[in-house]
Length: 212
Image 1: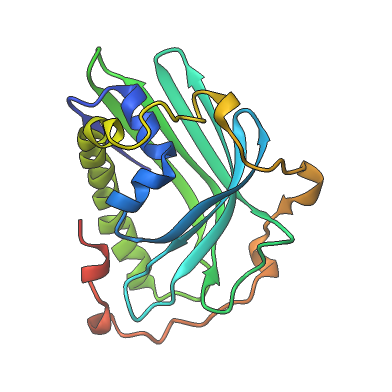
Image 2: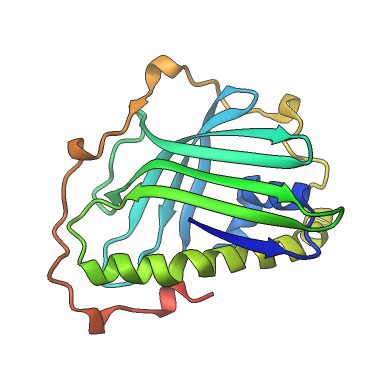
């Protein structure tokens, strides 16, 4: 769990940043690939995200059900892992599990906000304890700073990239295929292959992959 105060970034701008997959490709250097799979309702969809882990760890990927809710001047986005029959685990990634991950964006005056981030993730694989410590101490706070910096630059970027297109705000713009809840099931960690990475030495960890 972590938080960051975002001066000069309105809550609605940060909400757009967290939704805009095209913009994410600009600022999220840990991301390998992301795309939306389909929509369930006007405020829920299913998506894919793959994450570049510091080498020599294997890269991780997720299939998640995401839902969002404007709360007056505040916003909430939450996700958890699901199984989709057309997007099974891949041989080149370790399928990780988001038990529950959420963002809460609280307005802090007219032009600022506070971003709260809470995640419970099972990365799968028998990871060494030092990896878990490294991620919790460094990676999450760096990711929050990246989101804040992305929020500062987003208005200028969006003006040049389809400025009126925000299907998370205007659901009539959403052209994703419909997904039935019956097609999905909860992704339980114990049904996934466990990759043993406990023997990886700390001095071989590449830090360049997750620098801000």
